[in-house]
Length: 254
Figure 1 (cartoon, rainbow, N blue to C red):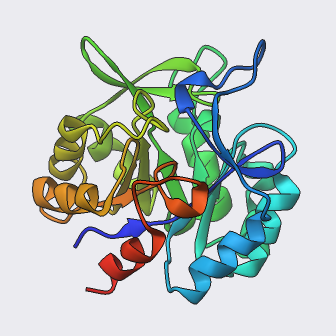
Figure 2 (figure 1 turned 180 degrees about the vertical axis):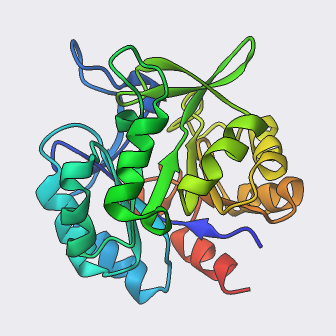
């Protein structure tokens, strides 16, 4: 059954909803759809009270560690955390209460090539049962390609059936942001969702463009209930007007 998965996106220490494709290291800051006055821990406590497990806390750049840890401590065992996760800092987040750590950029080398050796280092540190692989991707003429460094840098790793077969033994779940539609509230990438349901045997969460409970239902329909969904910018608790948080909670309680 498709489930709604909550999220806490952190930028400059604040809970925000941004357009993923506008993240850059230099120049103007990202396009912000929403900046919360409430701390990260407030959202984590709400998810805990409503029984929403398996959500993700994503640190978008520096200055977010304190906020992330406060959220993890507010909901022990209920959240995954990602953004700059490496072997040397992963244990800190698990000890703070994360059920899993999410990794992307570390498993690529300086030339942005996938490194199985780096992935093995992460597994050696935390174990596959506590690891989520983030294969967030952009669409190209040849298919979807993983993007790293806050989705700015294209890698050599295609998101396809072979990739999931190869990577599944190293992790417990997968997280896929469809970067091209992330934060735009213009609808999901149905082709990607359908492919994920066919390619991935392990739990997988899709994020990008979802804007209503109808999108949850659509993902359940086209994936056979095998893909979970995150809704961000469209959600009323993040300033959105298209999706009610209470409706998403109710969807999980069917």
